[in-house]
Length: 393
Image (cartoon, rainbow, N blue to C red; front, side):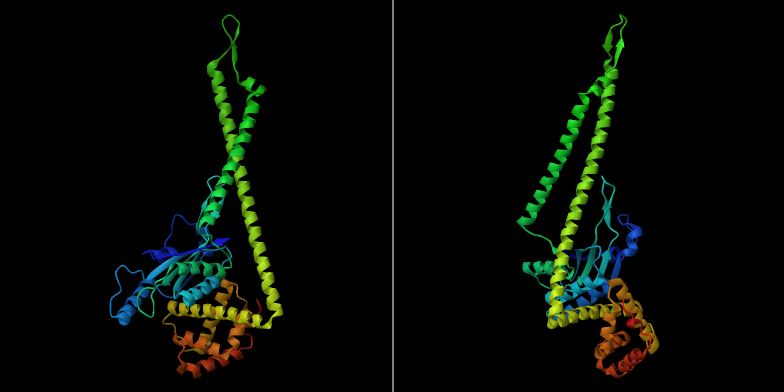
């Protein structure tokens, strides 16, 4: 399955749409609970911060035609997790200075096929990003190769195939259309032959209505015969349409299954190669383990920010309640992003990292002045006999 990412100026109703703050007629309400959301800051608040920083850094106001906040729509799979999108956000910041502060995964949009009446989901995610260059205070300036890099990073982080660009993509589209036209032609030819065969058989003779005239001779009743032929043609047309729809539906199913099979084969091959390297090379294993734990730590930090944003006035002076809140945050990301509890355990075994996370939750920063207090919390956390993170997923 191919993916793509495309940034544009953020819309005024972006948060209303992305976070489902009102009902829309083009979504399926029964699928809305499958959506996932993450927010570090509101768009309006972020724009104010950007404008203030621009004035401070450059001495000038942000230009009226500037687009300091932009939004991307990313094509995803049904199984794409928030963790994968958080990793993509991290890579965009590291390599292109694009800082994502809102993510919404939508699984309730799509359309119903007119012919098959089957629901066709449109799995995608919205990434809202800060487009300010922190060195100049102005908006980031990217060139064409940077946008190509965005596509590469998206495919890599989401473990999907990169969208094809240029003449090759157009050629594939043309070939697909030709194939569809050939299938349509084949269906029409088959139905035409069936109609021709049936109309030339005894069934055609049965459509002709003959009645005796006043002299006793058999004569064709034109109006009744035409009515019979029209009725027969309507029946044939209905049958042709039904068979054509069924054939198209089956063809689409076969194509989709073949695509899924090819995608799974590629993934299996990739995982086999990766596992072979991991099992045979301890350095690579250690490196991959560190990358994974870093990504989990990253999403932990972001969720802590979101927790503080949701409840800024919550009393966190009670160490027991603080530990409980941290536990709830960890359980939440484990459940939503399919992270094993053992990974959380591994992170909190590191005293320095544990102190950093608790300090961040308690004070909203990693100030070393709070190191003594965070050490006490870490030790209390460690002494808990039945730690929730000791349970393997």
